[in-house]
Length: 474
Image (cartoon, rainbow, N blue to C red):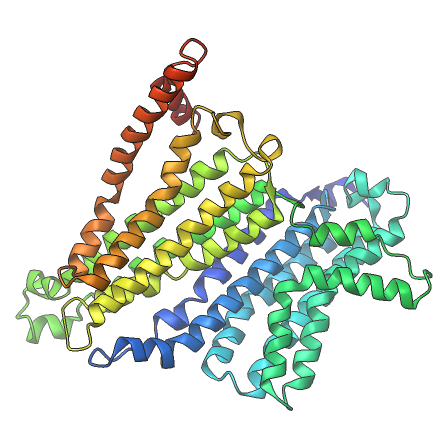
């Protein structure tokens, strides 16, 4: 094979990460675009109308995230991509981009056999194509990472990789088979996809036992896929996460462009060609947009600060990150509800919309804090020196991670106990959060400086200089 047909796999991985992040994020659209009657009780609408779609969205987001994780894991063995690998990867991406249709179908008609079978077939085909990638790479070892190519038993490694990429296909086969009988069992098998790495370990043991050891399989490779301490490519996690943040921020303004720009007919006859009056009619939506964008942007800023100080990311950290991204993906729904219910009514829908937004903000931010706490258990491997306990930036980063959990809890409690909180004041609070960042930063700087001066004033440089140096590196 000519060298000019074998290229670095880096650009292909970046392209794949972009598609995965887009697909994972746009699956909130069927939820956010649900027609919600303004004169109905929002609690009942959420429970009876939105909840099934929200559950399907969460399931679909994690299925895509797990497919992305398997893609990351698979391409860790590929150093160079030839034409066949590239074309097979494009086929994988085509299947991934079709998943939002199948998920929307399941969310709308969860009890229909066709909806379950169509999604299951997509995952089955996805697993088979990934298996073809594994087989092709092992037939062309020049494309593989050197550590895999020099493995003592490549057959056992290949079999373990095949099992890992085919587990989801096996589960979806059972889901499709049981769909005509009962949808409940089918959904049980679909939920089991979330635990596919653990299932792969048990299957490998069962296969080895039943074959009497004749079917060789690398237990180390299989266990690495299951282990919560398994390292995940940090650059790909950042690329995937940045894609989700960027798309969520963009989806918010798309809603305004689609629904809040008046038509020429409405402008002429309803507003007498007064564009200012036409835009002022929906002025609350712009405050909702800026408040929501500020929240998404600041959560990205915290995520950026956190990953700047991570030396490596484990599978457990990636699970927390995926959950955080799933909640951030729900921000377009929070934006829609807070812009729709912008005044008080009989059902207190305005307060319910604020409370749902607070829940989304809290879950997104507390998951980011969980990543940092996880890293603190293995600081020598996972963290840079400056954010380890006692480091110059430890409290600074911790304060940043605590801002949104604290703010969301306070606003949620106020919404439960008082009638003074309106949607407008909620969005003003969102826009004022950067000021809170600055105030808490000053407090953290003061406390850390005093502690360092008391404990060891000669060895620690001024904290302001340390933080300035950190900001310059970022």
